[in-house]
Image 1 (tube, one colour):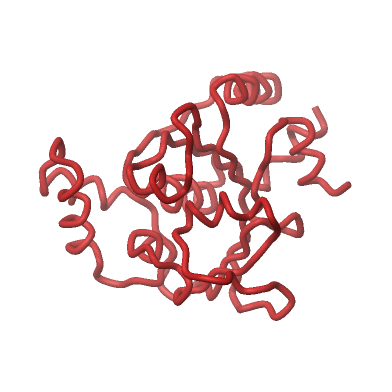
Image 2 (cartoon, rainbow, N blue to C red; image 1 turned 135 degrees about the vertical axis):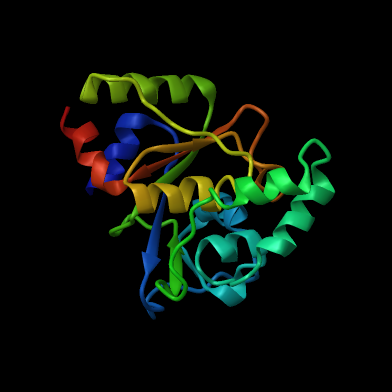
Length: 203
């Protein structure tokens, strides 16, 4: 049992390993059809696979992974068409706060890996989230501080944010991820940098 499996056993539930690759490995199968990143997290329960720009059919996720340049105006219009409670100006401001990788810094993403992932992501129920926070407080002796966004919830606000900041990131999802990612009504999205999991395992 490796350290990711040990973390998963201690925390409970299913945790999906996500690795950001600087190349396209030839020993991991490519996803069989274009998917949304949030959908890929759900589908990874059947095994690991690779995502590239051409197999990721969500412009928001491509933007967050550095695979889509100058897409923010398009995204503002797309988000506004589904969310009447947010103005175009509000969306534009909020969008700038969503983390994104440097253009061209990665070539592929492995989803569902136990071998050297960068981030672990889980769609957890509230009780499991409570237990996670208890474990956090037990390890670090402080509250878990998180920021919550409803824009690009799984790809940008959790996966990329956890990867770039080294912090635990949470989201209640966004309309797109709840539609395409099969995130249930009672689920919270949590992303944990792998750099932190030894603290949990050893405590």
